[in-house]
Image (cartoon, rainbow, N blue to C red; front, top):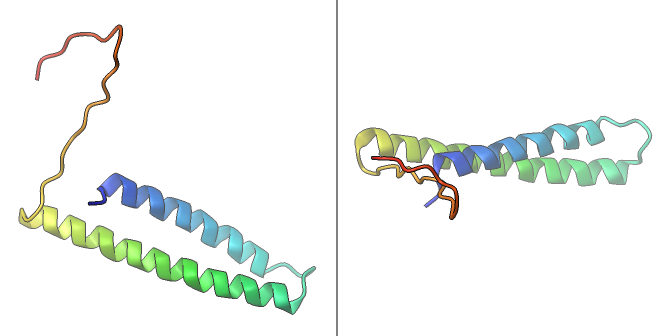
Length: 86
């Protein structure tokens, strides 16, 4: 199962790709073949974004309804770790 954090991470990376692909599409120093390739890739990226948004919304709905629970994982070190109590 994806976590909320991993989905948001994927979404942020995807948004950066969309932003930069749009920049490429707006260039005036490239030919139409290049622009068509950019449009094709941009369409795929937008589909991926929508799929990730749907998956994130479903996960949040499931957590809100109690259907799923989120786990919190602690980052543990092997050495020099301070003792803590839960």
